Amino acid sequence: MAGVFTAGILVPTFMSDKSADASSAFFALPSLHPLAVEGRDAPKFAQAQFMNDVAALAPGHWQWNGWLTPKGRVIALFALLRLDEERFRLLLLDADAEGFAARLRGFLFRSKATVTVQAALPVSAAFAAPADASGSRFAAAGDALELDWSGDGAPRRLRLGGAAAATDPILAARWRACDLVHGLPRLDLSQAELWTPQQLSLDRLRAYSVKKGCYPGQEIVARTHFLGQAKRALARLRTAQPALPGAEVALETGGGRIVAAEGLDALAVLPLDPSPARPRLGHAPAQLLPLLEGLAR
Image 1: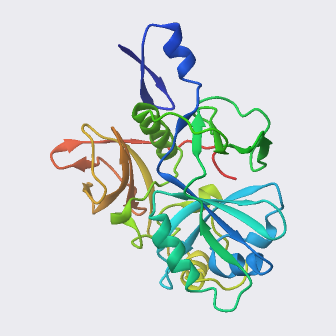
Image 2: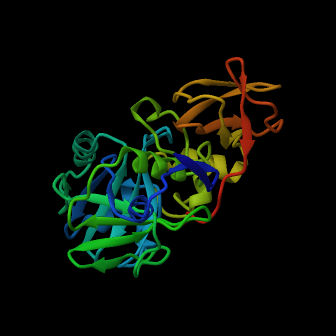
C-alpha cells in the first residue's frame, strides 16, 4: 500500500486499476441525515428558526445553514436545499436526526408545515466532479439530487436519493477529513451547543446572516459581528497522533480546544489575539495549516 497527499490528506492508494476506479465510485455517508421541511408556512418557519437567509435562497439552490440556541450556540449544521416555494430538504451533519426533528417540531405551533426525518433516503458521495450540479445549484440525477461539494482540495459530488451505495469506512473518513481541511466543522454530540458561528468561522462558508430578521441566537450573533467582539476563531491543525473532540490545545499564550478531528487532521477554536503560535496537544507539537477555500455556497 502507498499513499498520496490530496488537499493535505494522506489518502491510501493500492496498485490496481480496480482500486483506482473505485476511488470515484459512490460510497455511503451514514453520518449525513436527510430531513424534509414542507408546507405552506415552511419558508416562513425556516426563515424564523435557521441562522442563514432562507428567503434569499432560490429554488434549485442550496446553502450552508444551522440552528442555534437562544444564546447563539450551534445546535447543528446542515446543507439546506430549496426544492420549490414550499419544500426544503436538510442534510443534517452528524447530529441525532430524530432528536433534532422532535426539537424543531416544538416550534411549529400552528404553522402549516411539517418536519420529517427521511431515514430511508440514501446519502452517498464520490470523489469526482459533479455531472451537472455546480456551486450552490443542485441538479436532478435520475431519481436523485446531485450536489457539488467540491472545494479547492478536490472535486466531490454528493447524491441524495437514488441507489444505496456500499459502506466504505476509508472513503467516508477521507470525505470527513476533506470537510475539515476546508473549514466545515463536523460536530459530534459532545460539541453541540458549545460554539458560536463566529468561533467556528462559519462566515467563511457564508453559513449565517447578520442582516435578516430575528431567529434564535440572532442578537448574540449580530452584536458580536457589529461590535467586533469575536475573540476566537477556527484553525486547522495537523496533529502527531489522532486527537479527540474536546481535547485542549496549548499555545505559547493561552490555549484552545479541538472541536472536530479525523485521522491527523483537526479543527480547533483558538484565540485571535495574540495569533496562535506553537500549538501542542499534550506533549506533542501540532502544525498550524491554512484552511482551504472553495466550499462556501
